[in-house]
Image 1 (cartoon, rainbow, N blue to C red):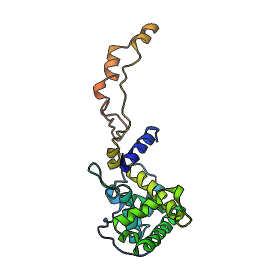
Image 2 (cartoon, rainbow, N blue to C red; image 1 turned 90 degrees about the horizontal axis):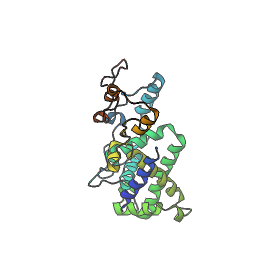
Image 3 (tube, helix red, strand yellow; image 1 turned 180 degrees about the vertical axis):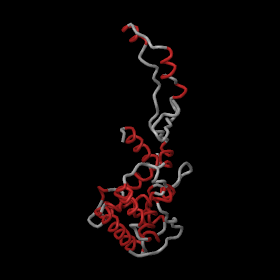
Length: 236
């Protein structure tokens, strides 16, 4: 079982329970705005919530260099496969940039973590993390992936990598791409044929045929209810 399959197995189990230097790395992903990717106007928001959303959407938190570092890390954690796209293709870096805007302690963790990562990469390879080759990048992450082997020097990097890994998995596996990768179909209506006949017989009652035809139609159990603007059910 490879790393991505291990992650998927872990997440399927969780779903079952309910649940500042600027530079451009070669091949760095285009930076997009999350509101250009998803429609945030299609769900109910109070005026205060709309104003808050507008404020959060207006600015980016990460500098270009920080964002590119986050994007590289996301794709190292969840690279593309033949079956699913990489984390950056699911706009996970944009999600992380959006998510950390409201939490000052998380902002400090990410900003300080990226600085630590660049300093460590310069010590090891003579260049910032995003400019190191993928083998050197992977070697660094191998050091940071095992908390029980952390040293006083690497502990800050271990803590940062654990945090960005959690954000990456959360961001990816709450998107359509991530759900498809898991094979997760969400809640589905079960088949219900009414109260068992033996129970009805014991009580001396039975269903009315007209009621059964209206309320127990298995051919429609996968239909999604549609409502008009006044709350009337359209496809009863």
